[in-house]
Image 1: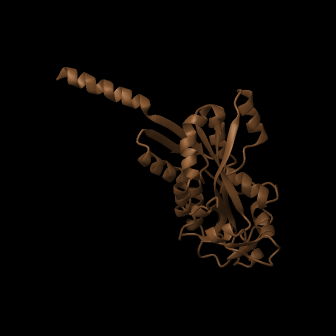
Image 2: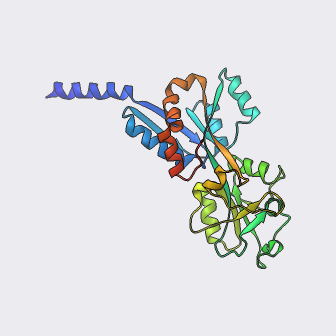
Image 3: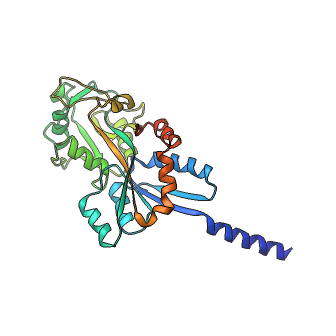
Length: 272
């Protein structure tokens, strides 16, 4: 009996040695998609174990530089300074676009405002516009929510919507996208920005115009695909070439027809 137990223990230890454990960290936007993809991949590949955690694009890329994650999820491109840090350690990073995302501007459902121009959004998030009556709404202070500076969504929104102008000091930084959704749903005068997959019934996604009010378009998978919605961004996986053999099967799975079906089911935009 004792001999059998020892043999079984030895077998389990040997089997554990063959389990491929991967760590994925980073973008809060990519997080729910990566989790679903990992679940599907592990069902097909019993010898794989993948752990996925958020924290923001900057956090994920820092973890990649520090060699504490195998894949960094990002909702923005890696900065030159980050690429240089990877290079300093004698490594080369690999960039892969796994999906696209429409960035939605959300308000409280009780808000009468249902559309804003890019210029008005810039005014709101830089602090020049402080009351909803200035953009056709009721006399009510605007409560602005955003992400922390480590977030790729923070960077993307600043670059593409605010024309690289600084956020107002009054913008309340949230540690995660879900926190923005919750805050906007509970605050009558609130506004924020989230990935399309995070839009729920307890918030209202508004139409946006990037041509000074000639045409307003609502965020959706369809308007992102036909490029009529103006705030669409690629979502990235970053890894180093030395890890390619280990991580590539999972990356290839996401890029496959099956993986892209999950992209669509989760409310993101497929590559094709």
